[in-house]
Image (cartoon, rainbow, N blue to C red; front, side, top):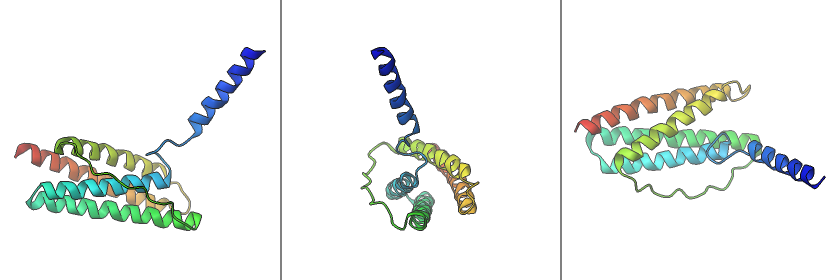
Length: 150
């Protein structure tokens, strides 16, 4: 009997862990933080590069920040208030590692936004955000190619 009870509680705990939204996935506050982190990294990269590359990073930073603002608007309309923002630490990785990480985050964001297209109220907004993340992926690939060839 004790063994059965232990297995039941283990299963309950497993279900709770599976149903919990891990940080950085689908919750809107986590998406806001991810967009703000990307914006900060893009600004950091703009300071490290020059010319057209710097301009491209500044544009990516501005657009990422605007996506975060849009998500904040959605959260405010849904909940009536915003969650308290957590500080975003500066990234200290090499430039190519930062670019790879940004590319991976943009891909995940794109997939998340695409999965939310069916939302009856905000679906068109998420569709537009998915398109912008797709554009960011293309820009990042161009920047990676440009920076590797120089």
